[in-house]
Image 1 (cartoon, rainbow, N blue to C red):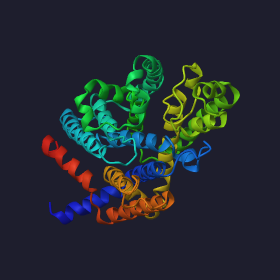
Image 2 (image 1 turned 60 degrees about the vertical axis):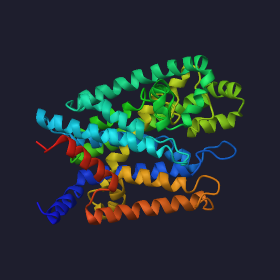
Image 3 (image 1 turned 60 degrees about the horizontal axis):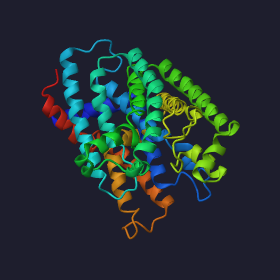
Length: 405
């Protein structure tokens, strides 16, 4: 096959309505993550900012859900049967990509980006998914539901136990540490970070991934499916948010957390709204009813999965009549690894004192990042090529797996 034919085929695949909507949703997740990486989620008084209200927790969760959707699409989508040969080939490709994503995450952790980098956890979730690639939508939905029910319970007990037993390790500070190559010398601590004390604990986050895989096994070309994702997702998100807000405002949990932390009640409410991690995990069982971003409660998980479903469903619907308008966003979302890594490099050049871009305001930097991401997305769509890191990981995966069955 000639290079021109391959390029034409790539353009036709990227233009498919289903993939266009998925990519557009992933583009929104990327822009949301860039926003909370630049704009503080709470202000000096402790009140939630617009970035905290809109994107805190939700963008990263959307990113993880769409990773599961993408994996499901890669391994057969809604097809009822997947041959053993093709499934084994898919597993090899995914395993190689997962290892490379983990390595890229370890390298990027050496930057002074000020970001809790998701890529190591992201790669591990791909590895965790390998035994479940044969499952259909219902089985994957049941797996995600079990994770939502059991994961937060284990997380809550384990975190509260660690507060006493691991105080010398100052484990709350680990929340801000992305796994780095140096952590490989302490496997026990690295394992603890990945499971429970890190920013994206694997006791919690695979719930998003498996929920995304279940969604990816649906017929995403169907308008009916897109409508149901939008309506059911929005309803779930709203109900869970209401439960969380009522818990915060109608109980004395804010009073209790203010007493424990020494912060004002207003600051506690801001932290519970935007999830800025100034508060310790509480032993109060009403924690399970909070919708605070990054807390890992069942209510927060269901809220974020609902938001992700609604965003994906809406993007799938909009991709049909507004394909050209969405092309910059979809193009950006089709190369998430490259843009994610690239924006961390930019943050490394901006955040430290004396850095090259340090004089830029947060608002100016965010504008530059958004415009650059959309411009690169438009260019990528026009050329019909993969992003550089996507192309490298794909080539490595296919090289190891051999010819596609």
